Length: 370
Image (tube, rainbow, N blue to C red; front, side, top):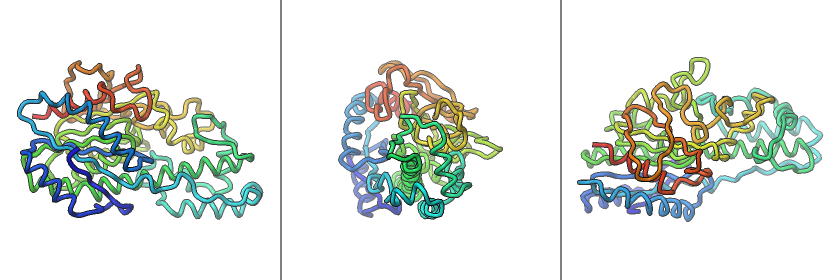
C-alpha cells in the first residue's frame, strides 16, 4: 500500500499533508489508476492494515497483467474503534423497575444521534416513536434469537438495554462512516481529480467502509467532479434498498442518487452472502420492533435487511449472479449494480473478503474501465 489517509471523529482529514503525499506518490510513479480502500466497524488501525495487506496480496497479482496501467493504492483509516459498543448502564434495580428512569435513560442515549429520518430504512426512526420504557418492553417481549447478539443479564429489561445500546453504537458508527466519506474523502478525491485529470479513481469498501465509499460517491455525484472509474462494495453494511427508486412509501433509497447521477462511470459491484451474519443481524432491534413474528431477521422479507446479506433489492438497475471462481471472466455493465452472491462457499462470513475469488471480481471491475 502506497499511502495512508487518516480521518478524525469529525469526519475530516487528520493531517492535511496526506493529500500532498498522495499526489506526490501518484506523480512519481506515473499512476494511471488510484485504488482507495476503506475498512469497516470496530477496526483498529492495525486491523485495517492487516485487512488491506491481505486484500492487496491477492489483488495486485491479478492486476499485474493489465496493459498500460500503473496502480497506486491508499488506505482510508477512520476512527471506528474509538466508539464504545455500549454506554454506561443504569443500576439494575432502577432499570428493571422504574419506568421514569428507563424513559430518561433511553432519551439521553437517543439524543446523541439525529432521528434517522434521512434514511428510515436503517430503522432509527422506530426508536423515536416510543417512550424509553415502551421501547425496552417491546424489545424484551419480542422473541430473542442467539444471532441477535443479545446476552442475558439476569433480567429481560437489562437484556433489552444491552440490545438497544448495541444498536445505538452501530448507528453512531454508521453515521460517522457517511460523514467521513461525504465530507472528508469526497473533497480529497475531487481535488485529486483536478490535480491529475487523467487518473482513474476506484473505490473499494468493506462493511461500513462500503457505506463510507458510497457516501463519497454520492457527494461527488452532487458536484461537478469527474466520474469515478469503479465502485466495489464488499459485504457492505447499509440497507438493501439503498439504491432503490422506492425504498418504501415512494421514498428513494439513501444512495439512490449514486445511480441517477451516474457518478460511477464503470462497474459498480456489490458482494453479498447469506453466511454474513453480521450484516444479516445489524438491524435486528429495528426488525424485531417492526415485526415481532418475523422468522428470519435480515432476510429479503425484512424491511431492515442489509445489502451485504441480500444484495440490492427493489433496484431495477441491478442484476444478480454468482460470485465466480478466480480466473473466470466477468462482463460488467456500466450503470448497473452487479450483485455477486458468494453464499455457496466463496464468502463464508462478514470478513471473508480478501480471498482470490473476491479480489478477482474487484480486479475485473477495475480492469474493465477503459
